[in-house]
Image 1 (cartoon, rainbow, N blue to C red):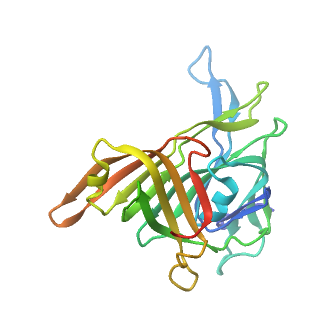
Image 2 (image 1 turned 180 degrees about the vertical axis):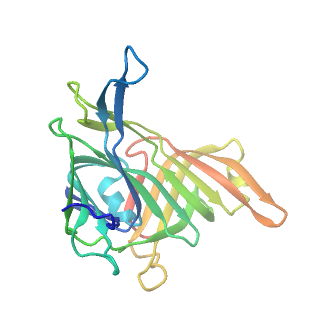
Image 3 (image 1 turned 135 degrees about the vertical axis):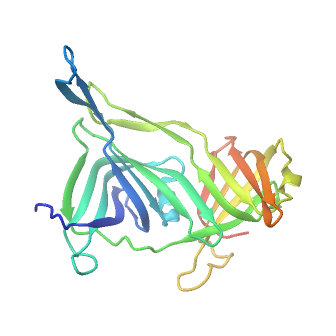
Length: 297
């Protein structure tokens, strides 16, 4: 079916066959071609020859479904067989159409977390990345129209929760986790498309804004060894307020490493905020432990 100049669509969901995974609650997304096109001229001013040197397809997106994503991907990412992204078609003079949605399919993909952010009185959000991987050197992406495989409606939401650093509570205004992943993509045998994707380096970092000005008393300007760190995302209760602390449905992050105060800032008419940087350092086990079904202690 040829596209109409009146066709419109909005991001709906991402679905993978293996592992069985549906990520809904989308807030935004961007399908990227990342095509490197080379052209040469030679004996004149203008190029006379051109060819695609590489095409490293990817899909950036953000979602409210943080527990669903992290339970499947963790901090290492996950290899997905047949990952599909859907943009739901709108309907002229109505709401959403029931068919003919845009479907972008990856034969194989490396699905990874990028950043997580949470603020007081706001919904937490996690950004992710899917890198398309070719299984045979051919283009790993196909584009078609299709009915939606399932619903992408929001079914889980979180907000910022309690934080403890070296046993001391810190009242956070905001928090961000940058997973710090450096992803390497390789082609082979002179091919165009990515045939191998992997984590080359990982340097995660938590950046926290504390409303506790006296965090500086605990941590000092030069920082200190981080012997214990716990940060929660608190789950929202559908048609209510918050899921009870004792119910194991919240998200918990823990690590050890180093912690320092980046700055303490304020003015005469506003409360001071302390920006705290937590740098995880691997000891034994994972560099960051994530529990997607935790009670708040």
